[in-house]
Image (cartoon, rainbow over all chains, first blue to last red):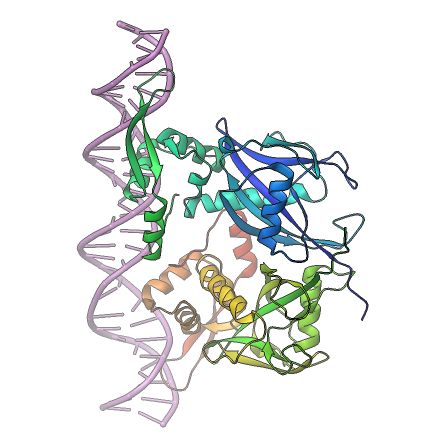
Length: 226
Length: 226
DNA sequence: ACAAAAGTGTTCGGGTTACACCCATGG
DNA sequence: CCATGGGTGTAACCCGAACACTTTTGT
């Protein structure tokens, strides 16, 4: 049999929530093909590393972010998806808290930037397609896992959480029912601190009780937001 | 940069429902490593073919089955998962109607057989792990997509469907509520034919209205069985 | 005092759950 | 006529959906 020539890459769709908008992290490619196009961060997997290690490494090298949540998304392998070589890409879905990291282009990338999800540049390869799939995953997963908290700051307002849901799910939510539901799960800690957002009544800060959530999950609890 | 040496394979977890039991299709390996061990059907992806094409080809070559339902499951890439080469495997989840096909070992396989899910032989590589993940996917998906019908004969009894659900989900179901629920979806056609299973009152045959289901799905209908 | 955002309860209806008896056939 | 599996309806309960006014602050 002929020696197989397929290359293995990883790419990541990294979501961040900034200025009450959903954002994606993109890099500007330094090399052909698609030189100077914007693309998902990623690159070839090295001999000795696992797929997850490759993603984490590439994200660090290219963008300097550390992800808060990471899971495999899907693998793409159409023979012609890369015009030069046959490349199979295992893609990942990541969430970060943008305020925690200073993004900066490093080795392989000409530039790095956050783009709001509805003002995207043209993307290299099939990366737009991958992004669409990631958006679906995000929307879906938001309803049955508490991953919204991986996009918000450590301490957040209830209105932030609500805004995040309405923004990502693209539908309005009844404030009372939403609050009632979330609080009934007992996975939030209400802090004493209050924050005044300009005008209006100051709001309470909350924290996600991650450990308690995982314990509840073990016991069969299901997070579920319609 | 050193030329990347990672190989790309596909493997499939093929489920069939035989004798009121969930079965998996396995092959006996002809070549090292794990020569003569049982394993998931699969193999290296060829230069010119997509991942799906590779799975379909391998299944045909190794087992002679044609799948009824196929979706990507997960990709595995730990550096040491194959003792000889670095192999990344993109795995697939497939459903077949066992009565439709004559399985037979062909080119690459020493033997092929159905194994009931709770009497498995030792499996090669990390294939047991993959199988566990596929089982979870099956259990889960059964509740929100009508994939049970891809495991049953074209015409089936309601009791077959119910048995399939109780078997795979490993819990009992109230017959009346189950029937009411499924029938309310309007995705089954009740045939005139009746079948007598030995003793007892003869039962009605049903067919899954696939087209109607997909039309309903387009319109926002959600299949959902608790 | 007014504008802006936060916080809070109740009612209604639909869907899920629980539950038991009669029917049609074969032996 | 008995054993076996098939087929059917109703009542209770719970959860999700709808809905509007008061509170606290800044200007």
